[in-house]
Length: 124
Image (tube, rainbow, N blue to C red; front, side, top):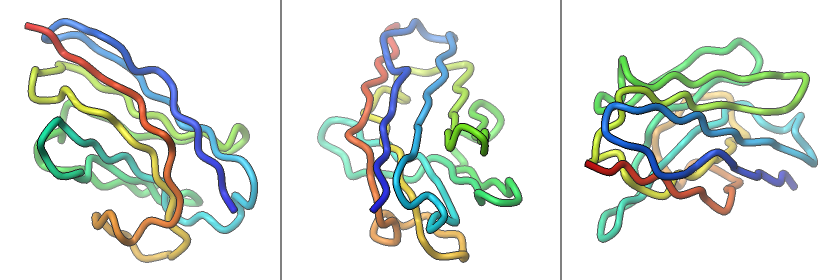
C-alpha cells in the first residue's frame, strides 16, 4: 500500500502562483509514476501532469503546459506541482496519484493510489 498526502492548496488571485506538494509513504518502491489530476465542480476529473519517478520524465496536459511544472524530490518521496499564471479555470480540487506500472498514462483508471485532494481556488 502507498499513502499519499497533499498540501499547499489555497486561494490565489488571477496570475498568482501556488505550489502543491504530495508526500508518499508505505511501499513507495512500487511507484513508477506520480501524477496530478484535478476536478472542478460539475466536471470529470482530468489529467494535469505526471512524472516518471526514477528518471524525472514529465508529461503535461495542454491546458497547463508552460504554466505548471511537476518535479520530485526522491529523498523525501515528494512530488511538487508549481502552478504559475493561474487562471479562474484552474480552480479545482487537485489530487495526487501514483501508478505502479512503468508505462506513462493520463487515464485516471490507470492509477493505483490517490490522495485526499487539496482545493485550489483562483479568484478574479
